[in-house]
Image (cartoon, rainbow, N blue to C red):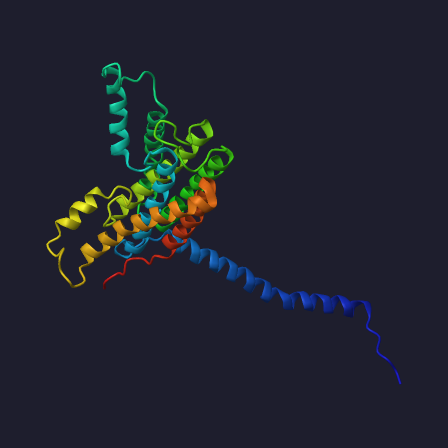
Length: 289
């Protein structure tokens, strides 16, 4: 009985054949990867339907309340309410002309913190100019803006933690977050709300900027169907936004006693990341043929 022994050319031909057989699978994997990247790029390049943004806008109001409770508990300064901060600075200047018992000399720490929050809010909201160029309703910008807010909140959390200051201010004359690192934590927290405000404004949210809801209160109590027992979207969405601020502030204040200032801002980072995912999942506006 004779046994066939493969020659030197047979092994090379077999290897070449195996390589040729593997090429289609490699090409298919490459095409699938390229197709996934193409679909993702196309998805991010699209515009979201502003009418589908009510849920994420209500969630933004929750984040406003959450952020506000953290800073006000620490230093009695609102990170997003700049009307109050401007008025506080004006009062600080006017105190120089008070009678001697109430006159203050120098720039008090609380006033410095109000100025820090105001300037930081300006800087944060000015990032909205990027959205004007990219497209205010483009999904890539909305996701990127939310991710920027994650980074701002993360920086604030680290600064608040390593400042060594407590989450609670003793009183208005001796607030927490009074060191340079603490004031920087306030600055990054305020700038994140500044960016959130311009995103809410440009997207056309029923809660306007989702940061200051004075206009929302006006619209609620002047809604012709305010007392209607039926569903009224224009009223119900705004009420949900106001209630979300209440729930957000309550949640943050409760967490401060457990996680501290830095830990609570860290939770805010996770919530901001959830917001980025939410922006990415909002569908485009349907085209009517």
